[in-house]
Amino acid sequence: MKVIMLGAPGAGKGTQAKKIANKYGVPHVSTGDILRANVKGGTELGSKAKGFMDQGLLVPDDLVVDMLIDRLGQDDASKGYVLDGFPRTIPQAEALDAALVKIGEKVDYAINVEVPDEDIVRRMSGRRACPNCGGTYHVVHIPTKVEGVCDACGGELVLRDDDKPETVKKRLGVYHEQTKPLIDYYTKQGLLVTVDGTKDTDKVFEDIEGFLR
Ligand code: AMP
Image (tube, rainbow, N blue to C red; front, side, top):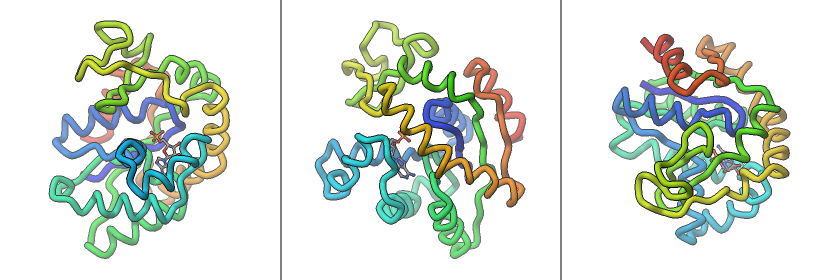
């Protein structure tokens, strides 16, 4: 099963992507996580990507597409995957389609997690991330057992630079301009399903499961 998650930054697509990956036994592939790991590891890709990420801008398509296609070639992705944060532009979607056509496959579902902009800004200021293991939480919606400490690895949680309000507003602008056209792209392919992302996390997942069944 190959699923794409669409939605504004902070719509909760990462949380839903992990739940889908768990339930259906496919890897959760987050381009944001892979890029952050590269930044942390000081790779050449990481140093090229960092400036864009810190400013809330998209990393250039060629860098992200090569990185993603490479990841999808790994063994654990042979039965499918949930893509979280990719594609984010039409050229990225076209590159993915072209790579899949070559191996006689296609995307099965594009799930659009819909949340109004004003909710996004409010939500993201409450987001906390673990720089150690990539775990994500929310001070209200997904609290940790001990405040400020990652449940999974005990790391100290941070508010990521790209989750700060001024960066969030910029990222929303980028989303509307560059990523939202993908809703049309996947609608035309008959693959788009839209869920109301303002509902409770478990309810959103139930709605998604209803479509995937
Ligand atoms: P995310 O964790 O998905 O919100 O991604 C964090 C940041 O990584 C984004 O603001 C972009 O700078 C970069 N990024 C992640 N995925 C992509 C992508 N598919 N295309 C371009 N930039 C990306």
